[in-house]
Length: 486
Image 1 (cartoon, helix red, strand yellow):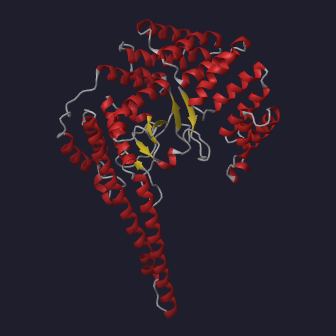
Image 2 (cartoon, rainbow, N blue to C red):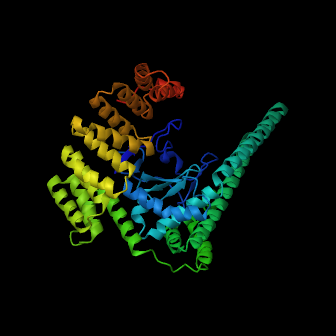
Image 3 (cartoon, one colour):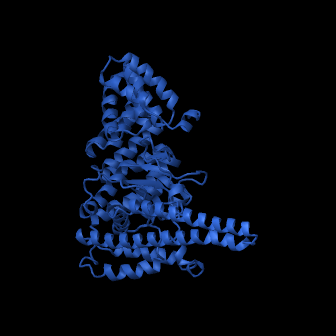
């Protein structure tokens, strides 16, 4: 599992380039333009650590594969199977999911941890798919443009009234101020009403996708009921017309009617899918919570596989590596074909400075996962960390393969540069270093490295062309003025 900070430069292909702390909020005024699943506020929680100022992007091969398996039939039902829509994990403990474009669904790890069944998460993902399939974001942008025009016209008319009053000597005072504010409030309420209608449409679409894939909408309904319970204490003092979403009570009522009409309302998740879901939740708990907290969620008396998985991860992160390896080896003995147990063993060894020992389990993880790109890049990192020149050809191969699928990984490019350097291939080392610097927003350094790489490649060769692409990249001017990241 890798944690990546949220980055703010959408001109680069970072994963992702949008900051959820600014996006995932109730629509205020006419500026948000996104669709959230959360019923009331959708505001981010504490994230991975109390000291973090922004949420963190989570990269994990096991969890991402599970999300792909959850969404594949939903995308097909929605006619989006060719769109390559990704599910992006956000390290935030609040219950929320949202879309900010037509290519990515963002979901908080808190949503995953708090959902008892796969069906609950599939319902959330189906709802967000409904926003994408319905083109809600594009229409919201159009609505906002219209609203902004209307607000400007209304404001100018109000200002004209103030000017007329001033010329005639009439005291407009508070009346003029009210005239200027009233049209803006009307516009805001109109936008919010529009977004509430889109939320209801996404709910209906989600149920249709679940029915088409012979899955139950019960999990989606239970999620709405959870949100309803969260709102019960404050709904009496909230004006429903200033919310970007319908009150959960309204959504529960509407969903109950259409969900229970489905012939698959009582369908259950398969035991295999439930087991994977439980392991995913345990992994998140092990990585994101303190040992004391892990012990409360999964006490020693709980000897189930998910509980042991969570405790093994916690032991590697906070305890002794020998104890962690003992626990991980016990998991491997029970499920010898689980690639993610070998991955976590390799990661624990690598982070403990035992790179040579990390290589065999990571090779096994690559084999059992059918070459998962994130695991192949982790293997490449371990091979580089051995400082054994005999393994550098393999390191280059693994890292290049991973980067073909995950080209927006600065650390992957950095390790590839190190592997090329140890092979004495300095042109490609410079080029890979330039790619890493570019992805990190270190534009001046990227240009310097790309210039040096270009001078070392033959004119018109693939390496020369890639270096030339970096040199022709036009970053934002304010980014160029920023100091490079240390």
